Image (cartoon, rainbow, N blue to C red; front, side):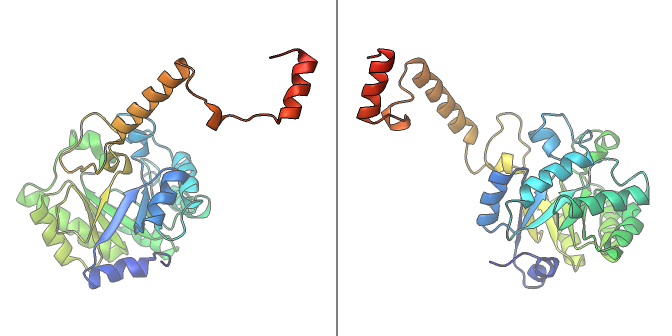
Length: 282
């Protein structure tokens, strides 16, 4: 398998081949994801939720995204590495946005960055792409706008909002975005956007008509044991399996079952005899 590039990502849409994307935050998991042939690994600011245990993504910093991107890039050979631009890393000034986005590529090893927002970002997206920084858009439910959206709700349910989403997607494409994430949008709306765009759409809670799909890896693996959004599908229950393994380990230690001979190191008979004589042990 060859390295996934923007050209390949765009070609998938033309050839009607679905794109796959998963989040990744560390070396070990990213190495597995990459080996499985996932097209894009997103170092998402969702790490604020699943890694840091925060109620939202707003407190995640650019330095934290760079750190986790470094961990992922150390493992990846083939997947395209997409790094999130966290809250206030691109909204304050164009200079800050270019510097932060550039450092995600330069220091973190990302291949591109993702911004949340629509037409209001068209000038910035154009500027970043002109400087050689590939940009993915993100519209619909945008977690960085959680306070103004009044919660995690499906977006694009009225004619006015649907029109706005379509215009946002077209504006991002015109500005040079190479793909757009559609989050929590009715699939009928996602279908219209996907058909109107020449660049791929990647959905999360946006139905089957998108050009690709993305999930948070922790959700896919069933690592969480609390509320799960409707669009999340867990393919295994690692929460239960890890719990069982930890309890088994604890019980074996308490009963002196672990470590056993198989998991211990021993001296040779001669060394053991010398040791027993020297320290008068049995």
